[in-house]
Length: 366
Image (cartoon, helix red, strand yellow):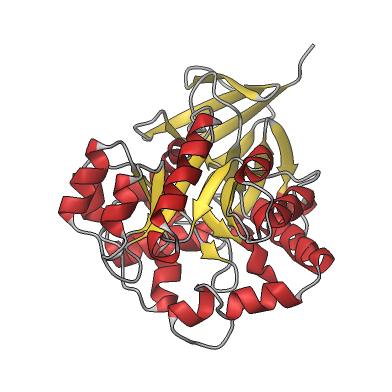
């Protein structure tokens, strides 16, 4: 007989993120029942949200946090500081650093992340090794290296392609790689519009599943993306650190795009979606329900993982319970706004990963 777990309190229901108060019954790894018409005993109580989905990371650079300020091209471009450090660091050191970041993400409520993995097949294999026994899932998007034997081996080990920019590639070769990824049923995503507008049109022509950054993109670009079914992922804190400006998210939403959110390079930012939510909400003045969706349900949809990221009967039980009685969260007048704008990992009561509850006191680092 399967074990039932009951959560109670305030939560956001369905893909509209409707405010509700009541209970959620978990059976095995699924949400079995949601209601408000009966008393519940032995419930875990608090503010309940879907676990976070971090739609864009580079965790391979966890070995080089907080470098000195330099132009973006010199920092993460081809031949830049990041590439130099990775080339000089033994694989086992890189794997251990990635494991630590994965533990960090699990501890702040992230249940799925998407990593643009450099280093070709070897880089993909290192991340897959780091993911062994993790309580976080990942979409691993690889990038060919000069010494790779062929794109097929890379795509067999990865979930798809994650390309830096059309400006850094031979467009004919890139188009061939994308065609191969599509033929194998793999994802394709790309950075665009971060430094300037020069790579946006060419990226749209390739029809990726999603495009990352888009700080320099316009309404016209967003309409083109919508027409071709291309989603968007923003990385606000990263763009602020690198001086690339703020993404025009309101224009993206007005164009009808599904907009997800990520934390980008670990060398520049902690992979903490609580902090990402706060920055998006306060700097872009976007409503708290929309911000919460961007960091959960929208990001899950962008990654093709619509069985999670939302609180609804039948969906996977990947949930986060925030305490309402901590000094930080006590006395808030709007629980969704309070969660989006001020909650931290210290306010976590428990995390459900695939229906299995782990209390905050059991998490690494606490």
